[in-house]
Image 1: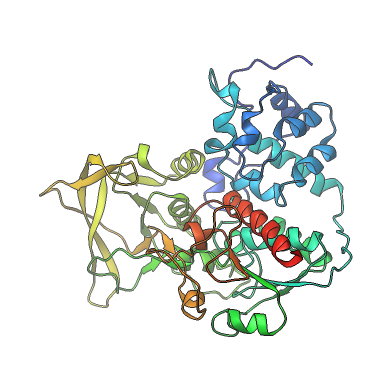
Image 2: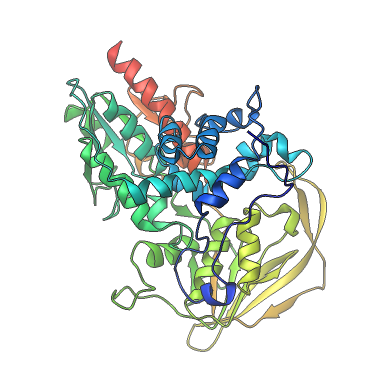
Length: 462
């Protein structure tokens, strides 16, 4: 096979920014077969396979890429599926640039192979040409409870179901899917893709109970009393952090969690839904991560004339994916960098009308390794806004921890687990995903779910 020596990735077709900024259709439209084969031929099929080592779930990347070159697109999908239960999801939202693609040898003297785009291509090809109907494995007589139906919970449930366990997933919201449903906008991850994966779990015999807030409706102890032999907690980090500045109680100030949940899970952007949502003209989003980009781009799509990203460091320190920053800029989002909010001002009716900020400069590195932002005295200025969205991070809800004796957490409220088994300090209870790591990535949560499933199987069978 002749290697494609082009230095850059095959470009991904996308909606025109001027058009997509006013709709919720998917931004990236996907590779054609010709594009996928062309990109796949850039792979050197390295013997030591560094890309595989960079994948948290160890997808056999060179193998599936070689199958794409051969035109065996379904085979490529099945290769990915051996270790990754959500290929169509990961191909869209996984930060490949800091994982598998970071290790790609082609990236030394050019751009790495577009592994994520090829993964998405294989998954999309499968969905377009095949009806998924998973077989229900033979029951092994054991029961496991999974708390939370995000990527960690879905992965753990799926892996256990394949081994014959009777798995029940308890989801607090009215719809399964966790952050895949409530956190990531439709234009980045169509919900029909997530729903298809959930339907496959049900086909495998996994029972999903919604509107079940564990720690309130049922406790972990009560799950054991009902006959579950182990419990996996994958309830995420859904408790938003706020700014701690004057004016946070004004009308028009909300967390990105609430804003995105109303849009993504409750379909507030659609005319055929009655979900209330504030449609502001001038919006400030505080933060520099993917959640901030999602909130800003959603606000733009809801009709905002001006949307500002207010971030206290420079663009180089932004934790958001480069692709998301690029897309936000294309869509007209304005970046106020080295800027921190000081106070939110309101009018006589208690509505937001101004965000007071101060300019920052970067000092010495802090514990995260990034240079610490330092205020420049006397540099205060104001942005005229009628909505402020806080997207500065989330922590785990303490409800489960507070109602479960013996379940220990660190000072940030994240559950303490053994590194390889995901076993908590409570016997028979395992945990993974954002409730352990704090807000992280979909693929890392999936990796934790897989680890926990293996450990739970060993625990019950021993």
